[in-house]
Image (tube, rainbow, N blue to C red; front, side, top):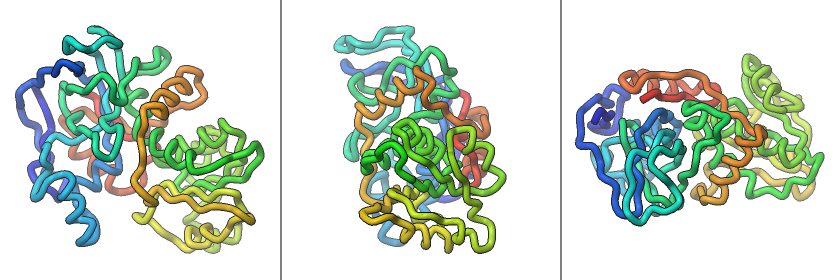
Length: 310
């Protein structure tokens, strides 16, 4: 089968199209013929190995030294089940599914930059909502699960004011929708060119972080949610950490290890079926151009998700 392998950490040019053996499902696994995947910010950070010396060591400890232990990156999958192991009961051949290759910090599986992948039945895998495409399904798990992780740290009551920093990215666009779903008054921080996008997702107010003295537009918020973490900062971001009401809380994607439980994954499926959330797709690349997709994501200005057609 065709696959993209990461030959070593570093440049996006290290991503190479190769031919590898098609996997065979174990007794508790399904084999998925992949229709679409996505290039996430995490994929780019792992491939580029851009971190502090301690961070670089930790990444390699988890994923492999010198090059990824599994050279086929990618954790997001949407596609069709082609075969299954004898113990699989809840999924059938021909089912259209979507999946995320992580259910806990110790149970994760890369390999979606390819034509096929095997995943255990009890991991984050479910029938694809019939009202969305394979491309849209591939744009839900990463941002949706990380946004769910952030929102789980809140206790939002209807009308609570929430500021989302990095609102136009894959995590931020989902965070807006999830916060609005539980009744929050949302202020989005992004560039002015993305105001229409975040407004269409439900944002009540917007702040353009690129403007001089943008911090003067800050109010006070029950929750300030940082969807980009330590990779980006600004005077506005530093000031937003203090723009809290009494008992307010600042929550960063870099605080602790994000959890991706199946209950959160299934909740995203339900919300997508009910059209309470909609994935945002910036660009679509074919598998053969995944290096270009990484180059684009690495610039740090994508809107929502970058999807790969397999």
